[in-house]
Amino acid sequence: MKILVAEEAGFCFGVKRALKLINEYHRQGKKIETYGPLIHNVPVLNDLAAKGIEHISAVDKISKNKTLCIRTHGIPRDIERRLRRKGIATLDATCPLVKKGQKIIEALDKANSRILIVGDKHHPEIIAARSYAKKVRIINSLATARALSRCREISVVAQTTLNTEFFKEVVAILLDKTEKLHIFNTICQATRDRQEAVKKLAPDVDAIIVVGSKISSNTKKLFNIARGKNKNSLQIETCADLQNKTTLAKLKKFNSIGISAGASTSPQELANVKNFLQKL
Image (cartoon, rainbow, N blue to C red; front, side, top):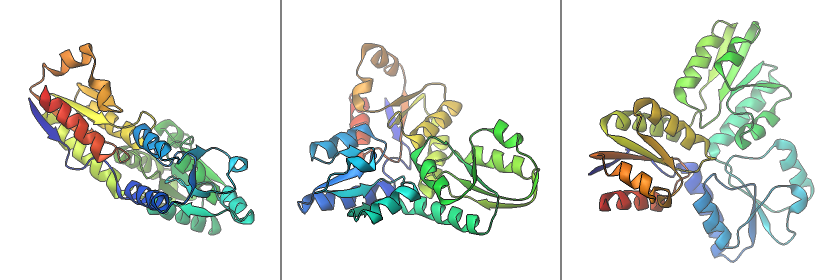
């Protein structure tokens, strides 16, 4: 069996940075917890929990003797202000590219532009991003974009983990909705690179496995792209998900398998999957 790994897969810059920050704090003996899950990857979160680094879901649950780490997806502006007012020590692990999007939205709001964010309204990145403007419309489908009323000027921003092709389709619709369209392609380069890599790999193998959490937005996008190029696509969280009779019997029929991984998937988990497949 031939095993091929996508040219771009696994941890992105923002995730590496966040884990470096929080692990350095831990090595220094400092007590720390995160506001929401640091990233969307269960094995990595389990590893942090084993070190005593848990996550909380509300400001009133903050421990007085711990530093609060802000997750990679960022937090709403009003919550950040509350933390400052309370004098709570924080470690900001928000991805710099997520921060960039927040600043763009804030500037557009000051300019009184009509702001659209293309993404998932339930995702923590978007929940945080929309707080930087008084009025924002979230676009999560082509139908929603088509239903928009015409106006003189529109500014559109993207979730950093958005499918690039979907963003292009939305932008094409918006061109007919306004005289002046300001496009801010805030999809991060790591997301684009991983999507392009899986597009390239998927048609050239008998099957493709995408490794990453079920709640990871960028992993879901990778899997959907892979499935569009190869019907034998499978998403797993860990190598253990491959170790059942039905899956093993199916995998052994393939002559070649490709592997891709979300931006919050650790190099170790990627290596575990590759080693397991090689032993087949």
